[in-house]
Image (tube, rainbow, N blue to C red):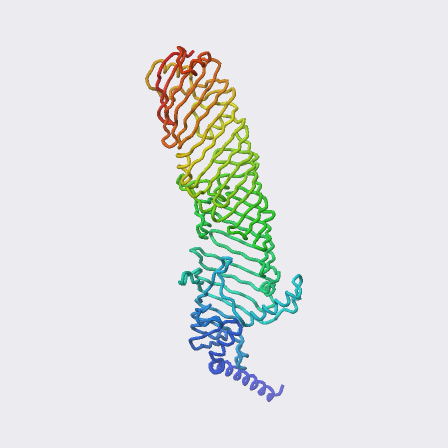
Amino acid sequence: MPSSLIRRGIWAIGAAGIVIALVVAALPLIASTRIVRDRIAWEMSAWSGFRVAIEGSPRIEVWPTFRAILTDVTLSQWTDTKAPPVVEAERVEVDLSAMAALRGDVVFSTARLVRPTIRVQRTPAGLFLPAVPTGGRITRSIDAARGVVNADPAKPDLDKLPTDTFGTVEFRDGRMVASIAGKDVEILSSLTGQANWAAMNSNATLSATGIWRGETVALDVASAKPLVLFAGGTAPLTLSFKAAPATFSFDGTASMSENVYFDGQAKFSAPSLRRVLEWSQAGIAPSAAIGSVSISSKITATGGRVKFDNTAISLDSNPGMGALDLSLGEAQPVISGTLAFDTLDLRSFLSAFTPLVPTGGAGPGEIDTSFADKINLDLRLSAAHATAGPIQLADVAATAQVKDGLSVFDISDASAFGGNIQTSLRFDRKPEGSQVEIRLLASDIDGGAFATAAGMTRLVPVGTGTVSVILKGPGRTWDSIFDNADGSVSATFGPGALSKLNLPAFLKHTEQGGFFALDDVSDGTLQIDGAEIKASISKGVARIDKAEANSAKYKIWLSGIASYAGRGLALSGGVIQPDQAATQANGQQGPNQSSFFVGGTWSTPFISPISRGVSGE
């Protein structure tokens, strides 16, 4: 190759390098003179639809990227000059096109907002959202897309969608504030994330993290057709919300039209429903719910109504299946449906959905009444196996209803203690005070098993029988229900035995006179032909009208009062031979009767003989 040609090539390469170096060196000067602050503000306004004001002078950086650094930037509504800015940022970094800058244009694809303050407003649906711009490329693109969607809502022509570019918006260490009672209240802090939307007709994603009510939250949203979604059409949507108290996800299709529509698979889980209520500030006392909950369901939502089909629900590790319906059109949300469980802890179920069961913490406390004001509930449930504290049940059919201050839980049918159980727990808030009603009917049950579950171990009829309990009383606290209840208790038992009663030893002690503890004669069992108990309850005190147990040789009877509050006993009784029953019934004492008084407490009863006349064998 001739040396002159080589020299000319070297000179050409060197000249090009010098030109490039001069252009790069001149970019800050060109930018400072041609891409002035007002030009950048105008372009940002045209892009966002807000009135953009930049207080500080732009600073241009060439390396590692060509960008403009703006300070004290505000985005405000055009239509309300007195309203505070929608967005305020201490600094905004805008990535610029170098070639466009040389032409005197502003073209940017990425904007970074550093320590922005975003002002939001509470919508009628309860969400906090920023004000919507009245113009700009985004708004114009949405308006154009709305025309495309309206032309064919079922299958809009995606080729006719606007193709304007959008780019990426990043935000770091921001916060959201809302005006509440005339004061700015911080809704979200430490807000960091980015929104990616290359072009209006392409897919878009949003990822953000922040701190809400003291908990770190993460939100991810994505749509393959975001412009169709914003224009009121139906488009794919995925959403994921994660926080320590709860997680939620949705994957399906949605429409943001006037009649909002969702159709897809949703999942929700929380390790503690109590913590969720505390964190969400739902206005429901956290004592109204305990334990974990998880829900996975196919949902269809439209017109203020959400249907949950093929719903898999787990309450405190009790899995169930069913269908639910949520209606938001009335004063309070309405939840109705059916749930079927293989196993179910009824205490956890009641604690999750009604205010009727005290928490398992520091004992009984005040009953929460706020739940019945926040929601209407009508659930039908069944369980192959269930527990209610120490009680084991099978084949349970039940309902839970909450409406207008009334909360009711009914077990219409269940197998327990070898028989059948029906029970009802009713909480009714009235102007004169809250009232609670408890009903129980246990038919053909094993009396011994029933008594053991109820915590009774002395003089319990062991045999098949029926028990009925009806209690009504004020319901301010759980203790007050039983302390002040009115009602009745009755029970009848067939052939069986009286547990923990050595009758010969009992009669021997009564013959000897003096006080003795019932525990002293509890090392035996008395076979009986049957037993009957009737008692009336008034203000928490049981008046035993009839308590009799009959055996082949003896009749044992009791009467008197037993207090729930103090657990005190004041009973009189007797042991007579069957042929002396008529005499005892007429108030006369025959020679073959041993009478006694029972005092002390439920846990430590003592016997005081009154007269002696029956000898034990």
